[in-house]
Image 1 (tube, rainbow, N blue to C red):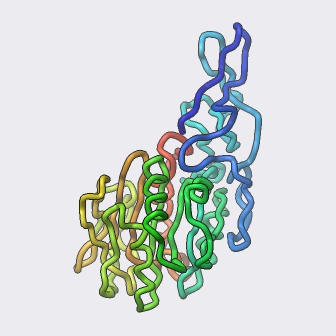
Image 2: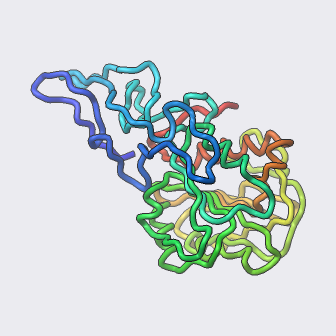
Length: 308
């Protein structure tokens, strides 16, 4: 996160801060930490934007003296002076507690309450929106979040809205898209947002576990992930970013990782990875989401070790 350290004044010892605790870029840490109405249980201590005034102390020589052994507050300050701002992970679960996550669209046809509850229980703040077609999708909306998850969308999106998503990603935002199954054209609404990336969901249903994974941070530790009634993902090229197939079935790629500017995206061709039935039986689904949140989160802050 692009911050300006204010650490030195006339030889006095001052607390080391960053833009007075404010952030720049696609999203800002320091949210409420409370869950949305659909978000499940409350986050762990220190997560989802807990406030605080602590910070490393800087000497007149520029050295940072830590005021905490580890980061426990999402306050925009490098409290432990390890060079990482807000790298808070109270539960040591591999997901930064300071992440602000927005889920766009309605849940799929199967129960998925455990998915949101799992995210909030790890300290993140999570809220679901755009379950109705009248909600606004623009730069101001996206700026509330560090990571966005696209679920079953309620409408097609305009080229202006797709461009707002592109700019947000280029500035450092991260998103993962899924597609809910209805068996109709509604399943391809996400393509209207993916167009600037050169990626799209392709017609034709496929049911086969994803067992072919490219070497990538998102795929570490994965051997088999559920894929039922999902779609292949196509790459038309010429998007201005870099798209890499990271998961495939026998018919072709069903998952792409995309990088452009300072941000990242993952396009996944199914929505079963959020269903409670899969959480209860397949530990690799949880592993996939830990990897996703780690890779999609801000590159220069909120970085915590991922359990391997």
